[in-house]
Length: 156
Image (cartoon, rainbow, N blue to C red; front, side, top):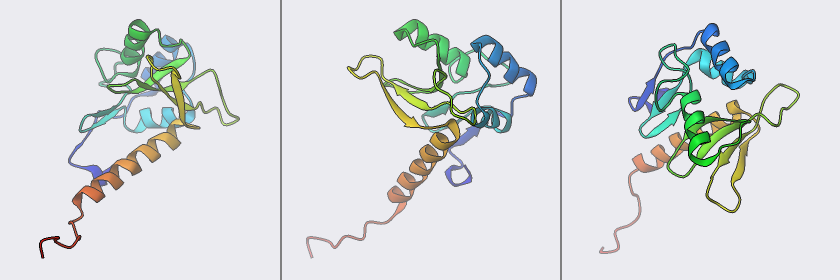
């Protein structure tokens, strides 16, 4: 996160009571890695990428709230009831798939692309694994953009 500053906006930690409110609305307990994310960050955005969560002690109000993003996707493209949106984008929704649970209580992260022949693609075995991979890829891409072009000048 520090490597991505000042382009990061952290919404602030969510309380246990508000996390339980999200669980009650969704009807399922949050997996440990997503719960840890909510407890530490609540949610955050980096440039045009939003990591949906709980903002200002509320589970739903506008875009970037996980519950609001989930309800929107359910109405817009019939998102399955067992998906919780953790990151919306222009092509679809990255979601926790609550239909599958591993022995640690984690759910895989899938990319739901509603208007494709194959409507989803598994991205990681847990929220924590997906988040770390996603942030590392972003840091790597920024590092590549920041490197000077060392290619020889073709003109001479």
